[in-house]
Length: 371
Image 1: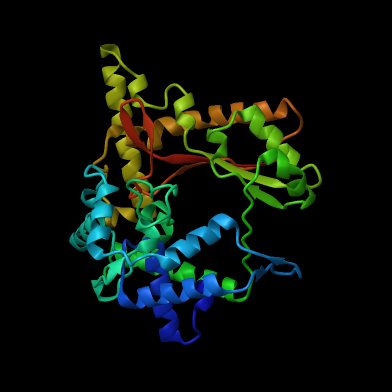
Image 2: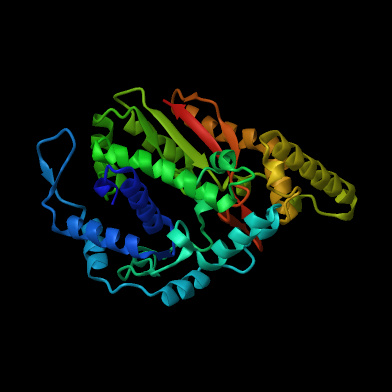
């Protein structure tokens, strides 16, 4: 859809809004349905695509083509089916309405949480989003309780808020601005995506031979033994000075003292109270410093497991975990560590990991390094 973005200002804005709906909304308006059909027609009928800067021809990855062909022939999803599916993948307990101070933001968030509609012109849905709710057998289902605030940069959205701009309007403005940038890159063929599905040992030499300037590992380190991970990453950068980026979301599970539940017993009652009060005070100061206090309640109406971890206990302990992570690497050779960071996610993001019997919002430890 991005490569079909027209040049005229009005047409361009409308097309980007249609693209935004296809990516993020549970339902589509009439214009988005037409734009999506046009894009699928072109993708399914086009000749093998030419890689940017290369003469060889390369077809779509089979799994990608399977999806495109399936969606191209799928019956349009109804609004009623989209509403039903959205409710199925949404927990009643995961609401952020009470976090918001302004009435308009609460009303908009309530509508968004109930419907999942995002970016519709005049708020009139024409059909459900087939890309979201109708996929071939074997396709992983959409993640439960995910929203646009799981994908968007909250700090950038907050900058767009004003007395006249509601939270959802700011989120839509943020999405359109970034989609416009992506559309320009796509039209100029500055973005090339190549999917390779293979065992790591079968492609590591090819990766290393490409001499990558940087590699992003997402949170692979949460699911791989750290010594094995460093051996893999080191093998990818044997020919060059590659900068690796990774982050961990599950590290609090490995460190005692990060969860307030670790401080059990009557003899620690005063300490638990102090931890909660200190964290709540830190939240208030952080919101005020960032200018969020005009829009968000403080302390947020969430389980104190979240606030005490993100704004207190994690800050005390995450450096211990990072030291251990890089100690493992340095056992096998040099490893230069960049500026590691502890990042607190969006206060409106329902992304979560699980502790035994408890649900906790995510924060990340960001780790740049090279060998």
